[in-house]
Length: 159
Image (cartoon, rainbow, N blue to C red; front, side, top):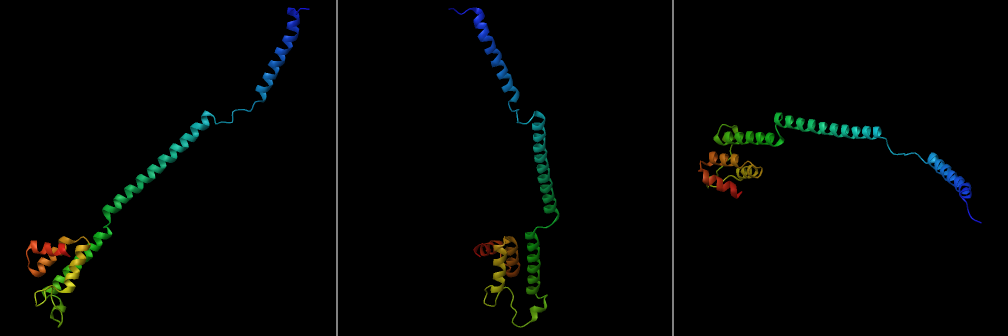
């Protein structure tokens, strides 16, 4: 009993056909690729780039606005400095005798009769020095006491 070519084809051919049909069915019912298509990926990338560009534009606009406001509006420190300068000038005028307080009894200038600085004047100088207005404090001290620059600077540095 030998197998002939016809016997092999009778058994093998239906097996090959059956395998091909099964393969075709598995491919037909295989789930489709649920990933995104090239067009969808491009749209998403475009949306991300657009959002990033818009955020960058917003930041640039805010930065430009901040620069404009900084250059057109005086800062709070400058406003405080101007106010303190005005107070210093008023104090100098008062000490020079142009103020009505100069003629009042009990008012004393920046230098007391014993040669020491008036404590109120010293506190004013100290406040100016601590707020970063050392030059203005030195100028005010020199005008009030007629001292030289080095003496006034050393005094303000020690405050």
